[in-house]
Image (cartoon, rainbow, N blue to C red; front, side, top):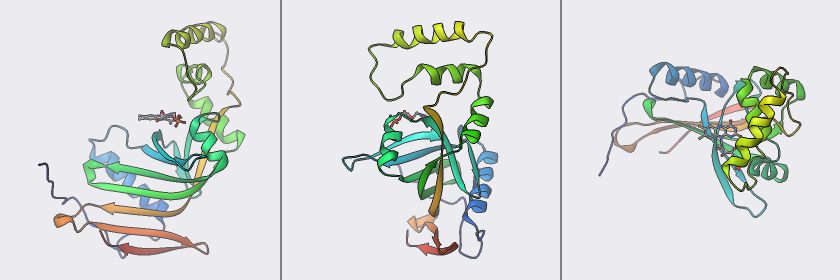
Length: 208
Ligand SMILES: Cc1cc2nc3c(=O)[nH]c(=O)nc-3n(C[C@H](O)[C@H](O)[C@H](O)COP(=O)(O)O)c2cc1C
């Protein structure tokens, strides 16, 4: 049986930053610099659908700032349809190289057109065309249908900029609570949770 002792770090209410987004930034760069995690910005986004079923899937964190966490997707996808009915989400990160987990509870809203356009323009043309091809989450007969569509679009936009489709853009997750989990020996892990109360972040330690 695989059994691992966690010994890479520790967390206390006294040692963490008073602002969870600053603490996130510290952990993000420590994890990145330590190496061994290919996509440190990969996070599990969990939404709840119309029937109450949760669904988690990985998306990429493209930006974070004092307002929260940003990701990009198709506005007609399964996740987007769920978000239209229920804008409450969870984001989670698992960074095994540092024996760390972060769980965020929050609400989402679509990012502004300017924000989405800026990110769209920074994407390689291949990714832009891929977004144009895919009606994300809907059924397709076979792969060739997508490849044929891509080929046509490649020709159409050979010498032209690809405009951002109206059904593709960003979401901003505004955090209500953020929990930082650091693995510790003997399963006595450190869990420090920040909760937003009246515009202030309350910091508490949770039992492992
Ligand atoms: C490493 C990784 C990164 C991904 N990044 C994104 C992303 O940034 N945006 C996105 O829409 N889907 C991304 N996906 C695909 C999603 O996990 C998912 O398949 C897709 O968004 C459709 O989800 P839905 O049908 O639940 O809406 C990524 C998948 C992986 C494994």
